[in-house]
Image (cartoon, rainbow, N blue to C red; front, side, top):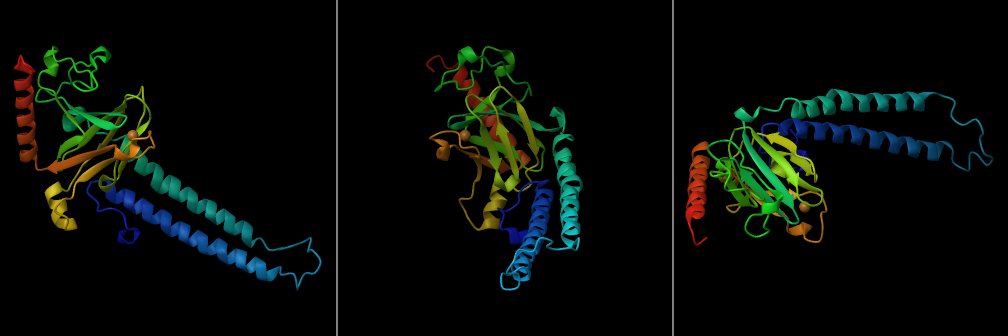
Length: 267
Ligand SMILES: [Cu+2]
């Protein structure tokens, strides 16, 4: 229905509503544009100089323009209270609980996305600012904490299972960044000092998307949507959406890798 907008291919459960909203805004703005443009052209002709050599101090006497303005305000109120606010409330108030969703902590920094999974125990390990090492441990994860043993961290790689609610807890280590995945119709600022949740249900796997778009190299991309510094252009993360089984396999492998490298004395 909203193909005419030329938006990226849709790949999340809630995205249709957002597209609908964007579509309506465009329709109303088109009507406004044509309306105001026509009114402007009318006044140019109606009050042209040849017909009014002397300024007309009374001007238009009809109330049409006032009614039109009231009409525009009503339409804008409908957009705001009928569409935008309910949509926003649905996104923000009806968050799934942690037990119903996959929770991922994403910490933005200049210029990368640090991804942190709780692992099989579903409990995030302790993080300590004193343990931060920009190369080895950018999140300051305390591996001596029992809850951290099975935690999985990646850099710029977000793996997600398809058709399952995902809660992304966003943080920033330095400046304001913005977590944007166009195909999911998700965009949320990451602000230093705050943990901001964003949730969505990806409903098309990367493999399916590759067939759909006809691009065998298609990757979902996390684009930083705030100009956050000189390296902003290269602040890209990649999202791989897989079936639940594939995701579980990936997670198991990662957990194994993690525990092997943790027990390696030469590491
Ligand atoms: Cu950024």
